[in-house]
Image (cartoon, rainbow, N blue to C red; front, side, top):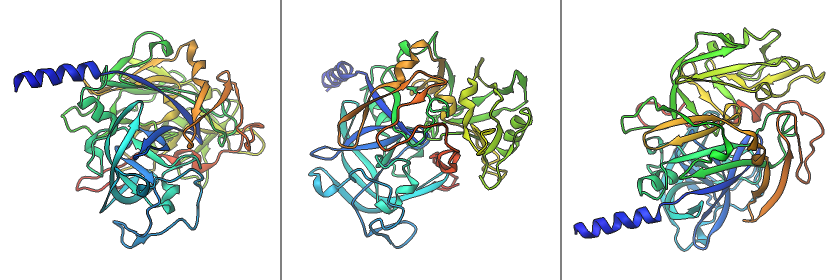
Length: 439
């Protein structure tokens, strides 16, 4: 028996490897291809380090929902053009009658548990996930080509109870290194003037990081909770600065979230930041978005561990909010002053596309490093499509670049910001003690 265990351990080590996955970007979110079923069905899913479940829009209708009643076929708000997951076309699918729900920062999803074969990055394994009816599309996706969301947080956060796919690779010893890394292409308003355009989104690496994309070494910060029951990729925040001035803002745990396309923070913290930006003000009716003069270059710094990370001014610019072109939306938004909103910090993509980020399973930690000159490579190359093929497009340069729009999209200048594509599209899964994901 001991010999069998040793042989299996050696086999697992030989099979451990790494992979790089191309990402697409649209409406401030990053997504890529997975396959489900036998034979494989290709789906585009958002990469979300702020939740832990795979949720996929499916052909299932008239299924029981935790909120009561049933969900039928999509009749309104039908934005999806890509094929839905169809368990009847998979010989390996096992559909249960167990309803489950998950609540995100700005919406919720419901469905039933399904078990089926999943492929991602060259690995394949059986995965339990949530199959949702198509009528719930608006809660999950921001692009007609997306049909789901892949949670990359820890199993303790999972509403289905299933271990997230990448964590399961780590636990099985299938990753060459216990880490996943994100080199994200910039999606600020100057780099991608038309948020509806589909553009290359960068690279996700599994089982390794990509030193060619960053300078120096990654500075890791241990997770706020390393008790063995981790939920989020959350780390302590030491300080926040605007134009080099320390604001006395800190937090014991801020969530590092690729699925939220703003830096969403407590109202009091947002007020402290914008008080240092002359001419800034809350945007009426926007539920937490602030405007500031577009002519102002904002220098915003976050200190994690012993390292200060200053966003480029263009990363702070989320797009126009006035027709005269004078006011822009800031990348920092307010979560409100409620008990939950007053405690929650979410560091989303405006920060993450400004630096290389690494999420390490052992020891549990998150690391950052400056992107180097080769970051322009992130804005070129093939991107996935729901047909299983690829389309090659490019973003010419960085910072002040113009996006090459996909057919049917316009990139003629910065659009006025759409509230739904800022903090409103965040997909952080929020959990309260007592079970059930909730805000």
